[in-house]
Image (cartoon, rainbow over all chains, first blue to last red):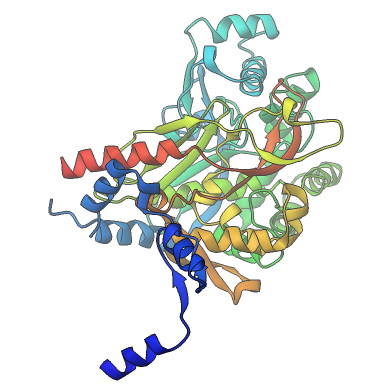
Length: 58
Length: 416
């Protein structure tokens, strides 16, 4: 397993970012190939609604 | 809390999947709609009082009062409507639905659709055709005359024909076929209307109706490509009412607009409406009309999307994109995105171009709030002035806040 991870870091990185777009932008600045998924935080980042959603997940 | 939302939603969606809406009869509204009286006027969308109604709805109320003989003319009708003597109530509170203004009054004939699975019934008036019609707020002598023809000639003949069928007409099967023939059964009803005419005509010919009247009836149905809409809508209503009232369910069971507000109801939240401002529709206008002429979103026809057709089946109707704006790829994308906010895929309504995948079924209000993806609705655009009629068609986003408010109410009720 360790070898595989080391092998991975030895190759050119190709990244799909599922999360904040700023992560993808930082990688782009480093010259990494990155694709940004169409993603936004639950409830558009509204903390109150996200908390209600948490309480209603089963 | 001991209630499992997952189990409650599974039960609500099972009711949708198992629904078997069958057109069984045509009756007079007063005789068959629960709570209907001579001075009750039902309207589309969430509750709205006379003073707050939009132009097309006010026009349709005026027309209905004249049609019922409760008023002689516009002035008398306006006075009566504002007098407090008339009870205004949403169609949805009476097992009914109505396109556009959705006005139903006591003497109007209504389709009776029975859900054979749960035994509940739903009602809707007969579609009057295009142009200057009551549902767009027209109330001229010609409009009233046509309504009387529907009441005294068309409805009795169709009723007699329906009585000759072995067991009514299965609307779920008919809608399913129409989806395979290029309809999405909200804004495009060409195939559904053709299938209905094909089904009813042999029975119509066996009735005592004279040949000239049958000719008029067939011409009337054939001239109106939306004839099927008023049959499909109560089938959807019968389906969604069966899924309503399930404790702990977050499934949306009604979406409806009154021209001022857009409202939703949620299965586990009793009869409460959650509303937001009705939006102006983004679409294509008929020559000579523009957004300035448009009334905000109106009508109960979004029961179609609630029941997994209409905008949820847009990919089945590539021909419609030219009418509502967009490309066939947009239609597929709209349809696919609806799976993100729904619980299951439909076991009867399928889309040929997507490998006969079932349409997204059972909108979960939690998923709408979580993803920010709003139900895709394609709809007709009414002129803001009474009686002008349809001026275009397009796509409309429901207001986000009604889904958020419903989620808050749900959390309050079930999580304290």
